[in-house]
Image 1 (cartoon, rainbow, N blue to C red):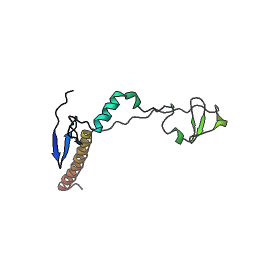
Image 2 (cartoon, helix red, strand yellow; image 1 turned 120 degrees about the vertical axis):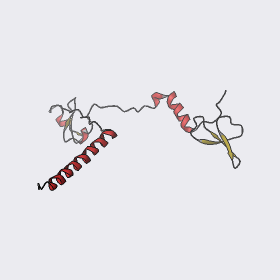
Image 3 (cartoon, rainbow, N blue to C red; image 1 turned 90 degrees about the vertical axis):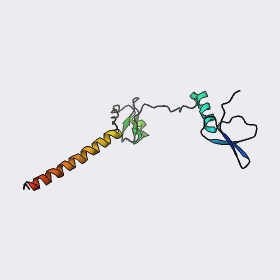
Image 4 (tube, rainbow, N blue to C red; image 1 turned 60 degrees about the horizontal axis):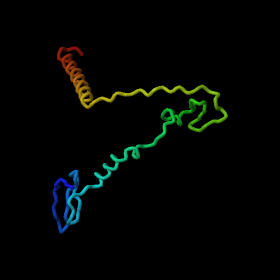
Length: 139
């Protein structure tokens, strides 16, 4: 098998070789032709077995923070008070309507800087008007 040539050096009798991705140096033996660091090995494992690495979180269909609500009625009619099930009230109350979360658009760095400049400009304009009124004897 042909390996790409990597940089190596010897320091205090210990041979060091650059890993194949080129991110770090690893101490190796005299007969070593190539080396891989743990980062590379882990990346290769994740590529080989992608289904094992996915989180297995089961969604309940309830909104975020439902267990903090004073009263929450699930789709099946189960009633919860502060996250604790109330079996006596099963099916007696209407299902809680959940409002969809309003997505807030985040400003980019450029938009933030433009807004800052506009504020500074407005302050300067106001100060200029005050000075102009003072000079024209309008106080």
